[in-house]
Length: 319
Image (cartoon, rainbow, N blue to C red; front, side, top):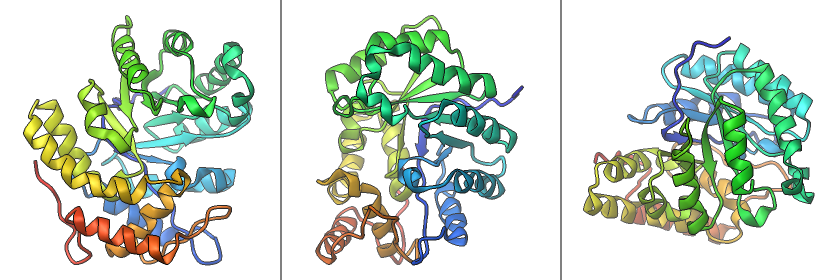
């Protein structure tokens, strides 16, 4: 089916989805946002229809439109990775087929949310979900490993078996949230007969996570600081700890801006940061998400300043 050569490793930002005040999608702003991220040298791709894009609040038709618009903007210059996030395995297969038809380069596969009710006890259900996707598309898959606390994470044995059973699984987006489990997964995925990459999304402790041996990162924070993420990843890959620490010091204020409690506001805060930095005109989110308070927006501004970012000249950090 596909002859694409996308390898899911390196720095892959997850983009946001801009809305108008009436909650409709702001397509011109979305196109501008994609171009902004794509202008960062060294990224390996851009993920759409993920948590950062508020996929939970997008209709199926809006998700499909996002694929079309993204490909129009990125062309073949930057890989497009499409999130597959739905409760229905049948719909997941249809979305995967549509993404491939429209020229996507990879898929980010979410676990159906209802699996939190005990899906870890029925791994055959996860296999069936992935069967519908892999029979509809042969695009490389990044399998999303949710936090332990979510009740949606795959037990290690299940995760390894899925990777063996479905050869198009080429990487794991790992948000397990436990350092011991994180490192073990990295090692055991690398040790498979057909090694599988780990893309960390532990953005609140990115340096430590990358130092464990991750093959890249996939994070919504890349919608704001992709340049710093590329610089940090390159420093870690080069074994330059001093440079990595210095870059991490730049990143740390953005961690406080985006990832303080409550965590569900992380992408709301990223939109506000882009407005403060002059890279987005408005910051609207679909309910039940709500705009941060004035005090929190002021804090986000202070953290952007501490990170060395300004609205006049977004600093591109060159490692």
